[in-house]
Length: 333
View 1 (cartoon, rainbow, N blue to C red):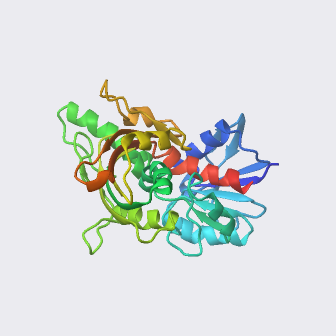
View 2: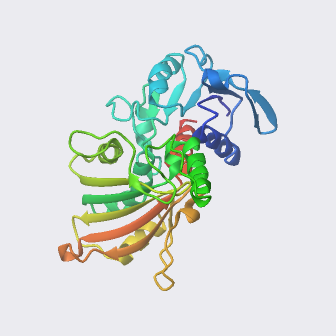
C-alpha cells in the first residue's frame, strides 16, 4: 500500500538523504511533495526517474498528505509541524522542537517502536549523537541494566549541515595554501582543529547537545534514574560521528558477553579486531545504516567487573537522522 508523502526541507543534507534512502528501501508511495523555504522554490529535483519542482512550504502544503518527513530546523517544525498534523498528516520530525514534549513519542525503531502507536500527529526523531550512542547500548541495558553512562563524542561537520561540510573542505584548502581560514558556519576553525560542540551553553556548564543526550536517552529508555554525563566535541571529519562510551552495569558483565549481545543486535555491526588494532572509524560508518562498535573491554576501575568501555561510529546523516525517520515511516505503514 502506498501513501502520499511530503519532504519538508528537501534541499538540505538530511532532505537529500531522505530521498536516497526512500529510493534504496523502495518505500511505497503514491505521491511525493518536495517542500523547502522560499529560497529554494522552483528548484528541480530528480527522484526515481521523475523531475519534481520544489514548492515553498506553507501551512496549506499538507492537504491529503499521509506522512510528512521534516528536516527543516526547530523553528520551522514548530511553525509548520502542528499545521501538517492538523491537516491529517503524521509528522516525523528530525529537529529538537518536540523531542521532550511528553505528548510526543521520541522513537528509535530498534529500541521503542511500540511508542509510535501513541502519537497524536507528531513523532520526534532523536538527536543524532543520542541515536548513535544508544542503538548499541540498548541491547546491553536490556540484558543488564546500565546504572551510569559516560560519553565523549567526536562529532563530524555533517551534524551542522551541508554548508558545514563545505566549510571544512574550503578551510582545509585555504590552510594548505597558506591562507587564513574563513569561518562562516562554525564559530572557530574546523579544519585541523577540534572544539567544544557549537550548541548554546546551559547554566550548569553543559552545552545543549550534551543535555539532549542525557534527557533523550532517559525518555527513550523510559528510565529517568539512569545516570548520564556527556562531553560533546566537534572534529574535522566530513560525516559519521564517533563516541567513546563507558558503561557501569548493575551486575558483572564480560567483554565476551557484550560481543555476543551486540553480534545479534539490530542496527549494530561489531568491528573489534584487537590483533590488528582495527576498530570502527568514520570511514567505515559513512554511507552505512549500522552503528559500528569496537574497543570492547572491561573497565578495570569499576569493581566486580561491572564496567565496560566501547567505541562507536555511526553515520550522522543516515542512522543519526534520515534513516531513523524513514524506519519510523515504514512502521507507520
